[in-house]
Amino acid sequence: MLLNKVKVYPSKIHLPKKKQLAWKIAEISSDNSKLSKESIEMVINRIIDNASVAIASLNRKPVISAREMAFGHKKKNGSTLFGVNSKIRFDVEWAAWANGTAVRELDFHDTFLAADYSHPGDNIPPILAVGQKLKRSGTDLLRGIITAYEVQVNLVKGICLHKHKIDHIAHLGPSVAAGIGSMLKLKTETIYQAVQQALHTTISTRQSRKGEISSWKAYAPAHAGKLAIEAVDRVMRGEGAPSPIYEGEDSVIARILDGKKALYKVPLPKKNEIKKAILETYTKEYSAEYQSQALIDLAKKIKRKIKNLNLIKKIDIHTSHHTHYVIGTGANDPQKMDPNASRETLDHSIMYIFAVALEDGKWHHVNSYTKARAKRKSTIRIWRSIKTHEDKKWTKKYHNPNPKKKSFGAKVIVTLKNGQKISEQQDRADAHPYGSRPFKRQNYINKFLILTENIVDKKERDRFLKTVQNLNKLKSGQLNRLNIQVKKSKLKRNFKKGIF
Image (cartoon, rainbow, N blue to C red; front, side, top):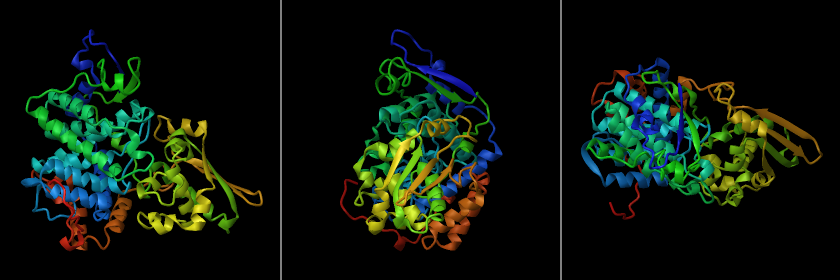
């Protein structure tokens, strides 16, 4: 790996292309590095994971609306939509839009946390849509996805967006562009321009994940993927992009991030070095913000120690800066304590999540978020007794560069009315790669079977699982086989009139 220093240069100083971060990203995206067996297997895991959560969300309102928008853009020899007959094809960018929204809606797929946040699985829908449209092979798709993960993970390690209240999709646009370029074997110059264009158009604020969180949270990554596809299409036709997008005098860094005196250090593999960043990422066992995964496990353990939850006086959660300020009481969002809050808000409230997990001793992607569940009096009492605190020790562990030591956990102290204290702590979720029971292939398959039960026919489920596990054997034009169909009668519609 190489550590690339990234800073702002005044316009009077010419910064050669080859010294620009976008070029370095493009260079590793257009190289001829070998695909490691481990990375290939993990891509397969994540395609299964994406399919699981996408199918489970097919009839949720945002996904229905996204699908209806795509229905207005049918195109012969286009791309497929989750749930829809694979013979019906759609404009590639609208397929990416609808499928990306389906994947993101339940907040239930993979994650990578470092200097910033990310859900690298968001790269898969737009890259797959392009691969289907242009009749690429399974190996081509693997190369594109592995590259996209490499780029996004390393941008997340090196450049913090949330400090400036910029949404994490600003790292997703460039990674999707890089992944598409890698899959299509485009020239370095073309990918360079596409990365810049994709970044330029995907800057948005974190208000999408703050206050009254709306359904846009599910659409935002799909929007970034759609814009990245359009960026690649545009530069393939010979057009350029704002440059240098990272280092320029009026660039993203200069005007939106740390400013003209900024210095970032972004790791990237050497040219032709095997890309393995996907192996550092981790999926979710529970449908909730990743930083709550270990705390759900903790809640289940603490429940076994408390016979009567009515005896709880207060609960203090000592955790990292990110957890405290993003999903904890440090966010100062009253909505995070509101029983009438949206599902999107509740899955970003560790107070709510911990209270429900403590009462139920389990977590369910639907039942744990119902209006009735959120308004249960016993839940509200526990919920409002919870306070989070930043602990520098946990913040330091959160930022540990060693994946084996990086921590997303907390220490929980439950104080009972009689003064007794019950304490438990856990560094990472049980399902984390370095947790007590890391997710393996069978876990991904089980998650798929559970989430698609009564939605997808057994024959179709078996066909998909067999196909995806032989991904590298799919020939050009066979990527449509990665789509999953359900009976037309099982797909809900939204007949409200729109533009399309």
